[in-house]
Amino acid sequence: MRLKFTVNGRRQEADDVWEGESLLYVLRERLGLPGSKNACEQGECGSCTVYVDGVPACACLVAAGQAEGREVRTVEGLADEEQLDPVQRAFVETGAVQCGFCTPGLLVQTHDLLERTPQPSDAEIRESLAGNLCRCTGYEKIMDAVRLAAQRRTNG
Image 1: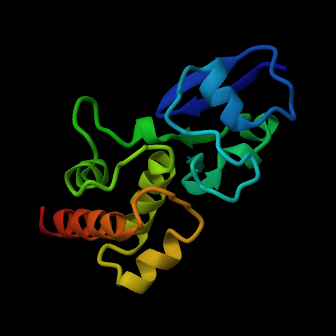
Image 2: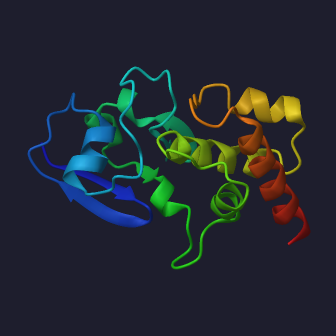
């Protein structure tokens, strides 16, 4: 099938897509967007989290055929032209990025959290990020990054 959908604000087409192929595979292998990571392929780790029509979803669990006509936003789409999103900057500045495998999903999930809850409590941060697993950081620097991003988004 030919898949037609919008990715990071741009109309995209991918040919010879099998309907059951994952959205993650299409993004990484067919469209050359390697930001979302392929880790568990079971929706357990969160490393492939993207927005689908404005809602965070594990791209490994979304069949390519389900993306037809939809709008997808990946971690690459968070940045505005040449400038990183405040969430991305905060992760870099606090050292919340180590091996980087979990980072794309954490960035998308944090971005979504701050859109819904501009000043989340620590409990709200933990609940929102519960589906994103990290083996490197111990999560404290991730918490620091979310707090910093929230502060900057609120205070400009």
